[in-house]
Length: 107
Image (cartoon, rainbow, N blue to C red):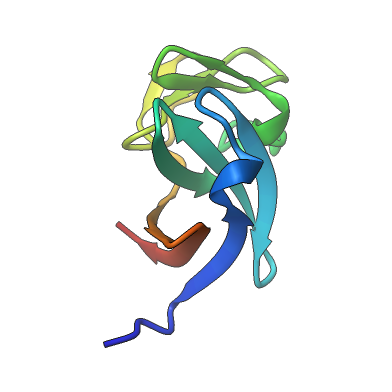
């Protein structure tokens, strides 16, 4: 049974382990991350000051905001480094064949 809430945003070959990219699902900015072969999707906008997380850096299993160095846990969206105190939304991701798909419903 197909789940129509998922949208194809990339091909698996587009994103190597340790890489991230900016994608949009509808009008929603999304940061798509390949963390050790697992794909994760977070809202691309930092909850501290609206910087694009896809312009930041992956440090272990965290993503660091490029503006003030705050960080979020990639798997959960939880804040892990000040000045970030509000979690970022995380979304469901699945791989179908060679397509990476994201659903905006939170996981």
